[in-house]
Length: 234
Ligand SMILES: Nc1ncnc2c1ncn2[C@@H]1O[C@H](COP(=O)(O)OP(=O)(O)OP(=O)(O)O)[C@@H](O)[C@H]1O
Image 1 (cartoon, rainbow, N blue to C red):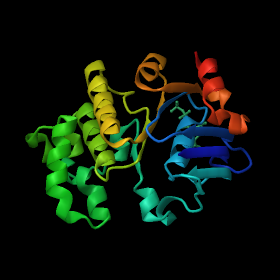
Image 2: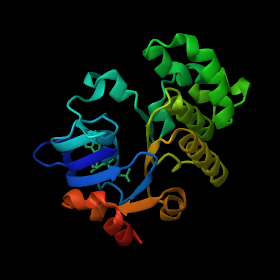
Image 3: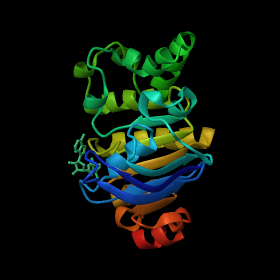
Image 4: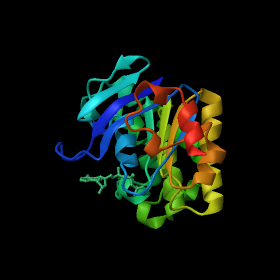
């Protein structure tokens, strides 16, 4: 279980952008998060992925409170998350060929011997042809780069996926392809998903339940049941 309890977070302690927000994702569950631009969805998603330390509140992973964040988080916790962001160009090192981009987490965790097999397998899964793998980010389209970023997110076989507006920049067919990759992965592994987005129709189709930002504030443990927020999101 991934539980965010009464999270307050932001970039200025005196004026946090996320205030007292609670949300939970069960193993194998897909939760969509909708909300207006700038309300704090990405900030909350980064807290959930251990990339941003909250000012207050608790993140529980399988009942255990997380105490360290970013590079200080223990490796088994950090690698439990795969994250895909909205803008692949900001999320990809421009010096790396796509093959090295996908392999980055394997190299960073000392699993170089798995690189060849995993990159080949994942490139096929996300629909990247071998000729694209040798190119650097500026030599591929946004959709192709986002496919590589999704492959990178899956390469360590995470238990939780955080997709922050993953498809916002993509056309309908690439969107459908990437959502299908995530869903195949979840079906095979039982991973949970938090999908942040603006596209209500997409999230309703994609996720088991969709919650609206406005229903998460000050909801405390009641947000964990899902029922109330699901009704509110309709
Ligand atoms: N690194 C940062 N430093 C300072 N303020 C930031 C930073 N990142 C985001 N913000 C501010 O925090 C607020 C919430 O931003 P966030 O990206 O979490 O919202 P969002 O709901 O994901 O928006 P969108 O739907 O437009 O992506 C915004 O007012 C934004 O300007």
